[in-house]
Amino acid sequence: MNKQQLPQDAQFSSPYPPYHYRDDEISLIDLAKVMVKRWRLMAITFVVIMGAVLTYALLTPHKYEYTTVYNIAELDAETLLEPASGLVTKTNSIYLPEQVRSIQQQHGLERLPFKVNVSNPKDTRLIFLSSQAQESDGELVAELHQGIVGALKKNQDTMVERRIKLFDAQIASFQVQLESVQTSNAQRAGDLIASYSGNIAELETKKNSIQQGVVASVADKSLEPKGPRKALIVALGAMLGGMFAVMAVFLREFAGKVCESLEEEA
Image (cartoon, rainbow, N blue to C red):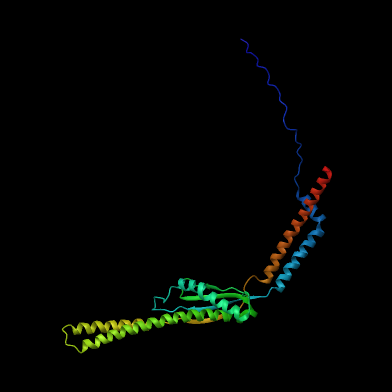
Protein backbone atom coordinates (compact mmCIF):
# COMPACT_ATOMS: atom_id res chain seq x y z
CA MET A 1 0.00 0.00 0.00
CA ASN A 2 1.42 3.31 -1.01
CA LYS A 3 1.61 5.92 1.67
CA GLN A 4 -0.33 9.06 0.91
CA GLN A 5 2.13 11.79 0.16
CA LEU A 6 1.55 14.84 2.30
CA PRO A 7 1.59 18.24 0.62
CA GLN A 8 4.73 20.19 1.12
CA ASP A 9 4.65 22.96 3.71
CA ALA A 10 4.17 26.36 2.26
CA GLN A 11 7.26 28.53 2.44
CA PHE A 12 6.72 31.68 4.42
CA SER A 13 8.74 34.77 3.86
CA SER A 14 10.69 36.16 6.78
CA PRO A 15 8.92 39.15 8.44
CA TYR A 16 12.26 40.93 9.00
CA PRO A 17 14.70 42.12 6.36
CA PRO A 18 18.02 40.31 6.32
CA TYR A 19 20.65 41.89 8.55
CA HIS A 20 24.14 42.11 7.24
CA TYR A 21 26.63 41.66 10.06
CA ARG A 22 29.79 43.64 10.02
CA ASP A 23 32.91 42.73 11.86
CA ASP A 24 33.34 45.47 14.48
CA GLU A 25 36.16 43.84 16.38
CA ILE A 26 39.22 46.00 17.01
CA SER A 27 42.63 44.42 17.14
CA LEU A 28 45.51 45.49 19.35
CA ILE A 29 47.16 46.94 16.28
CA ASP A 30 44.13 49.17 15.71
CA LEU A 31 44.29 50.30 19.33
CA ALA A 32 47.96 51.11 19.00
CA LYS A 33 47.26 53.07 15.80
CA VAL A 34 44.60 55.13 17.59
CA MET A 35 46.96 55.99 20.45
CA VAL A 36 49.78 56.89 18.04
CA LYS A 37 47.41 59.03 16.05
CA ARG A 38 46.20 60.89 19.14
CA TRP A 39 49.50 61.09 21.00
CA ARG A 40 49.22 64.85 21.44
CA LEU A 41 45.89 64.49 23.24
CA MET A 42 47.38 61.81 25.48
CA ALA A 43 50.36 63.99 26.33
CA ILE A 44 48.23 67.05 27.07
CA THR A 45 45.86 65.06 29.30
CA PHE A 46 48.74 63.47 31.19
CA VAL A 47 50.54 66.79 31.70
CA VAL A 48 47.38 68.53 32.93
CA ILE A 49 46.61 65.80 35.48
CA MET A 50 50.21 65.58 36.69
CA GLY A 51 50.33 69.36 37.03
CA ALA A 52 47.22 69.30 39.21
CA VAL A 53 48.62 66.44 41.32
CA LEU A 54 52.01 68.12 41.80
CA THR A 55 50.33 71.40 42.74
CA TYR A 56 48.22 69.58 45.32
CA ALA A 57 51.21 67.68 46.72
CA LEU A 58 53.39 70.79 47.00
CA LEU A 59 50.79 73.18 48.39
CA THR A 60 49.11 70.81 50.86
CA PRO A 61 50.75 71.34 54.28
CA HIS A 62 51.80 68.46 56.49
CA LYS A 63 49.43 67.32 59.20
CA TYR A 64 50.55 65.88 62.52
CA GLU A 65 48.77 63.72 65.06
CA TYR A 66 48.17 65.41 68.43
CA THR A 67 47.30 63.03 71.26
CA THR A 68 46.05 63.63 74.80
CA VAL A 69 45.90 60.81 77.36
CA TYR A 70 43.76 60.70 80.51
CA ASN A 71 43.96 57.96 83.16
CA ILE A 72 40.44 57.22 84.41
CA ALA A 73 39.85 57.51 88.17
CA GLU A 74 39.71 54.16 90.00
CA LEU A 75 37.81 52.86 93.00
CA ASP A 76 40.35 50.06 93.37
CA ALA A 77 42.76 48.03 91.30
CA GLU A 78 39.90 46.26 89.51
CA THR A 79 37.08 48.83 89.36
CA LEU A 80 36.88 52.14 87.55
CA LEU A 81 35.02 55.07 89.02
CA GLU A 82 32.98 55.21 85.80
CA PRO A 83 32.82 52.76 82.85
CA ALA A 84 35.18 53.78 80.07
CA SER A 85 32.44 53.51 77.44
CA GLY A 86 30.25 55.87 79.48
CA LEU A 87 33.10 58.39 79.73
CA VAL A 88 33.62 58.31 75.95
CA THR A 89 29.91 58.95 75.41
CA LYS A 90 29.84 61.72 78.02
CA THR A 91 32.91 63.38 76.50
CA ASN A 92 31.48 63.28 72.98
CA SER A 93 28.05 64.55 74.00
CA ILE A 94 28.91 67.09 76.74
CA TYR A 95 32.55 68.12 77.21
CA LEU A 96 33.58 68.21 73.54
CA PRO A 97 30.65 70.38 72.27
CA GLU A 98 31.01 72.75 75.23
CA GLN A 99 34.72 73.29 74.66
CA VAL A 100 34.35 73.60 70.88
CA ARG A 101 31.76 76.36 71.31
CA SER A 102 34.00 78.10 73.84
CA ILE A 103 37.04 77.99 71.53
CA GLN A 104 35.02 79.25 68.57
CA GLN A 105 33.72 82.21 70.57
CA GLN A 106 37.15 83.10 71.97
CA HIS A 107 38.91 83.00 68.59
CA GLY A 108 36.02 84.15 66.40
CA LEU A 109 35.94 80.94 64.35
CA GLU A 110 32.93 79.58 62.47
CA ARG A 111 34.39 76.09 62.56
CA LEU A 112 37.56 74.43 63.75
CA PRO A 113 40.14 73.37 61.13
CA PHE A 114 40.43 69.92 62.72
CA LYS A 115 38.37 67.26 64.45
CA VAL A 116 38.73 65.53 67.81
CA ASN A 117 38.38 61.77 68.09
CA VAL A 118 37.62 60.36 71.56
CA SER A 119 38.41 56.70 72.18
CA ASN A 120 39.17 54.08 74.80
CA PRO A 121 41.71 51.52 73.56
CA LYS A 122 40.67 47.98 74.35
CA ASP A 123 41.73 46.59 77.73
CA THR A 124 43.03 49.94 78.96
CA ARG A 125 41.93 52.47 81.57
CA LEU A 126 42.74 55.39 79.34
CA ILE A 127 40.77 57.98 77.42
CA PHE A 128 42.50 59.16 74.24
CA LEU A 129 41.86 62.45 72.45
CA SER A 130 43.43 62.61 69.00
CA SER A 131 43.42 65.27 66.28
CA GLN A 132 45.17 65.59 62.94
CA ALA A 133 46.06 69.21 62.32
CA GLN A 134 48.62 71.46 60.71
CA GLU A 135 51.58 72.52 62.83
CA SER A 136 50.29 76.10 62.80
CA ASP A 137 47.12 74.93 64.57
CA GLY A 138 49.04 73.07 67.31
CA GLU A 139 48.33 75.65 70.00
CA LEU A 140 44.61 75.64 69.17
CA VAL A 141 44.56 71.83 69.41
CA ALA A 142 46.33 71.95 72.78
CA GLU A 143 43.87 74.55 74.09
CA LEU A 144 40.88 72.45 73.06
CA HIS A 145 42.31 69.18 74.38
CA GLN A 146 43.23 70.85 77.67
CA GLY A 147 39.70 72.18 78.05
CA ILE A 148 38.15 68.76 77.38
CA VAL A 149 40.35 66.75 79.76
CA GLY A 150 40.11 69.56 82.31
CA ALA A 151 36.32 69.31 82.32
CA LEU A 152 36.54 65.51 82.43
CA LYS A 153 38.97 65.51 85.36
CA LYS A 154 36.97 68.15 87.26
CA ASN A 155 33.84 66.02 87.06
CA GLN A 156 35.66 62.89 88.16
CA ASP A 157 37.42 64.73 91.01
CA THR A 158 34.02 65.85 92.27
CA MET A 159 32.77 62.26 92.22
CA VAL A 160 35.91 61.08 94.04
CA GLU A 161 35.43 63.72 96.74
CA ARG A 162 31.84 62.59 97.25
CA ARG A 163 32.96 58.99 97.62
CA ILE A 164 35.63 59.95 100.14
CA LYS A 165 33.15 62.05 102.14
CA LEU A 166 30.72 59.14 102.15
CA PHE A 167 33.41 56.78 103.45
CA ASP A 168 34.44 59.36 106.07
CA ALA A 169 30.84 59.64 107.26
CA GLN A 170 30.49 55.86 107.50
CA ILE A 171 33.82 55.55 109.32
CA ALA A 172 32.82 58.28 111.78
CA SER A 173 29.51 56.51 112.44
CA PHE A 174 31.22 53.19 113.19
CA GLN A 175 33.80 54.94 115.39
CA VAL A 176 31.02 56.47 117.50
CA GLN A 177 29.41 53.06 117.88
CA LEU A 178 32.79 51.51 118.69
CA GLU A 179 33.51 54.06 121.42
CA SER A 180 30.04 53.49 122.84
CA VAL A 181 30.55 49.72 122.99
CA GLN A 182 34.05 50.05 124.49
CA THR A 183 32.65 51.96 127.48
CA SER A 184 29.78 49.56 128.04
CA ASN A 185 29.64 46.28 129.94
CA ALA A 186 27.39 44.54 127.42
CA GLN A 187 27.64 40.76 127.19
CA ARG A 188 28.45 40.87 123.44
CA ALA A 189 30.72 43.91 123.70
CA GLY A 190 33.77 42.00 122.48
CA ASP A 191 31.98 40.74 119.35
CA LEU A 192 30.65 44.21 118.58
CA ILE A 193 34.07 45.78 119.05
CA ALA A 194 35.59 43.28 116.62
CA SER A 195 32.77 43.84 114.10
CA TYR A 196 32.96 47.63 114.23
CA SER A 197 36.74 47.58 114.04
CA GLY A 198 36.57 45.31 110.96
CA ASN A 199 34.04 47.60 109.28
CA ILE A 200 36.22 50.65 109.96
CA ALA A 201 39.31 48.90 108.57
CA GLU A 202 37.39 47.80 105.47
CA LEU A 203 36.11 51.33 104.82
CA GLU A 204 39.58 52.77 105.33
CA THR A 205 40.96 50.32 102.78
CA LYS A 206 38.28 51.26 100.24
CA LYS A 207 38.90 54.95 100.86
CA ASN A 208 42.66 54.61 100.42
CA SER A 209 42.20 52.54 97.26
CA ILE A 210 40.54 55.41 95.41
CA GLN A 211 42.79 56.96 92.78
CA GLN A 212 41.98 60.27 91.15
CA GLY A 213 42.05 60.68 87.40
CA VAL A 214 45.36 61.86 85.96
CA VAL A 215 46.07 63.83 82.80
CA ALA A 216 49.09 61.93 81.49
CA SER A 217 49.77 64.15 78.47
CA VAL A 218 48.19 67.00 76.54
CA ALA A 219 48.38 67.35 72.73
CA ASP A 220 51.61 65.42 72.26
CA LYS A 221 52.73 65.95 68.66
CA SER A 222 53.69 62.95 66.54
CA LEU A 223 57.29 62.76 65.33
CA GLU A 224 56.29 62.13 61.71
CA PRO A 225 53.54 63.74 59.59
CA LYS A 226 50.37 61.72 59.13
CA GLY A 227 48.51 60.96 55.94
CA PRO A 228 49.84 59.82 52.54
CA ARG A 229 53.36 60.85 51.66
CA LYS A 230 53.89 63.23 48.76
CA ALA A 231 55.85 60.63 46.80
CA LEU A 232 52.88 58.27 47.01
CA ILE A 233 50.52 61.04 45.90
CA VAL A 234 52.72 61.73 42.84
CA ALA A 235 52.91 58.01 41.99
CA LEU A 236 49.13 57.65 42.19
CA GLY A 237 48.77 60.82 40.11
CA ALA A 238 51.01 59.33 37.40
CA MET A 239 48.85 56.19 37.30
CA LEU A 240 45.66 58.23 37.06
CA GLY A 241 47.24 60.47 34.43
CA GLY A 242 48.03 57.47 32.25
CA MET A 243 44.55 56.02 32.66
CA PHE A 244 42.78 59.29 31.87
CA ALA A 245 45.07 59.93 28.91
CA VAL A 246 44.05 56.62 27.33
CA MET A 247 40.38 57.26 28.15
CA ALA A 248 40.56 60.72 26.59
CA VAL A 249 41.95 59.27 23.34
CA PHE A 250 39.22 56.68 22.99
CA LEU A 251 36.48 59.13 23.92
CA ARG A 252 37.80 61.47 21.24
CA GLU A 253 37.91 58.64 18.71
CA PHE A 254 34.42 57.47 19.67
CA ALA A 255 33.03 60.99 19.31
CA GLY A 256 34.65 61.27 15.86
CA LYS A 257 33.10 58.00 14.69
CA VAL A 258 29.68 59.09 15.91
CA CYS A 259 29.99 62.39 14.03
CA GLU A 260 31.04 60.57 10.83
CA SER A 261 28.09 58.21 11.16
CA LEU A 262 25.68 61.09 11.57
CA GLU A 263 27.14 62.86 8.50
CA GLU A 264 26.72 59.70 6.40
CA GLU A 265 23.06 59.35 7.39
CA ALA A 266 22.30 63.03 6.79
